[in-house]
Amino acid sequence: MATDDLMTRALEALGDDGPLSVEAIHRLADLADLPETMTIAEVADLLDISPHTLRYYERAGLVEVARDGNGHRVYDAEAVRRLVFLTRMRLSGMPMRDLQHYISLVDAGGHTVPERLDVLVEHRDTIRRRIRELTLSLTAVEYKIATYGGSTGPDVQALGTTTGTDRTALPDEPLRRALPAE
Image (cartoon, rainbow, N blue to C red; front, side):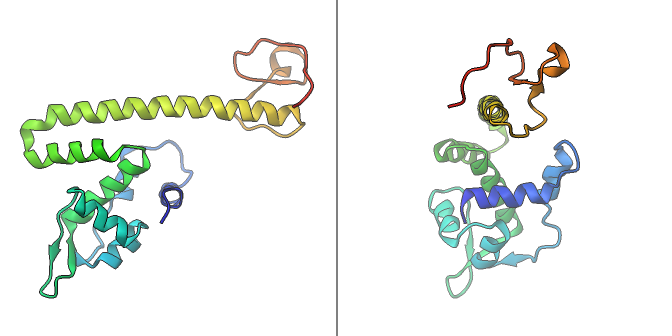
């Protein structure tokens, strides 16, 4: 399944009940009601990714999967938990090479915790920058919607509240003469 579809399902699972929290992440990763072992089709359905993606993660060395007597993959709870983490990191934009490096550190043992922390802090900083870039882009789109007379979202401040006019502006944008819409 496409990354957009997986992100949509993850956001729906979180709901609109306020800010995100560690508890929300635990709800996404709650595997208490899962069977002891699962097939590739069951895991693919659970995570909303394709069996091909699961096999790719295995070939890339990101997850180890046992085989049954017939050679079919058998996913235990540890493998499924790791796959939940992998899918979340991929949704966040972590490149495969960084994910492979991080997993190799995890597999190397506890002495790699400081380096794992560095990887995650760097990735967090990348995500925060992307969020700021997307927020700026959203504000620009909201501004343009307002120039066409549309209704803006809550991220755009109405100038009328501070200047007595009815125009809409980007936050911290100086009041300018209206330009023709493009």
